[in-house]
Length: 145
Image (cartoon, one colour):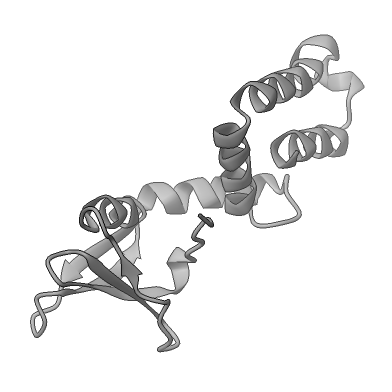
């Protein structure tokens, strides 16, 4: 199995066919991802995960087509907050998903590693002794390791 990466900002619509066992994602530029086939069930869980990030509505012309309207406010707020902090040189969403992936595959190591890095920042050195760029660097390394 390989992870699936979908840029939600680029998602225009998705189509669910064949009793919910076939899912096709269409992007803003007109291209589409390969069709997803759900052998032992339907696409409900996958579609619910998409709906957690974006608002959708059913097409009036095709009952199997769902049009993406906009990102949910919570997702926009979280991305905006990370962007304002300017802690990460890369997309903050990528850092969070990488951390979550590490947490899923190596839960004990990732948890202990993150706690040890954050403990140094928050407990042992007062803020006036540690410059902001150093705190940002430590947080970035703790989430991207």
